[in-house]
Image (tube, rainbow, N blue to C red):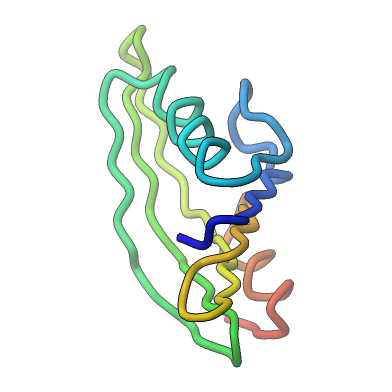
Length: 106
C-alpha cells in the first residue's frame, strides 16, 4: 500500500463509513469501520479487470450483522497503482459503476 493512499467511499452501501480516508492510518480506520458492524464478514473476489494503471475488483460481499441479519451484495472497487503500490481505492456500490469509472463495461 502506498504511504499516501487515499480511499474514497462514496458507494453509500453501508452506513458509518467516512467518505475519505488518507494514509496508512486512514486505511486502517477504513477497515475497522467497515468490519465493526459485522459479526462475520467475507469478501470473495470474482473478477479482476486491468486497464493501464488501474485494476477493477468485482467481489461478492457477505456479512452477518450483530443482530443476525445477513447481507449479500456484489460490489466493485477501482484500485489505482503508483510505483507498484495501491495509491487510491475508489469503492462503488455495484460492479457496473466501478467498471464504468475505469472506462470499461461488463
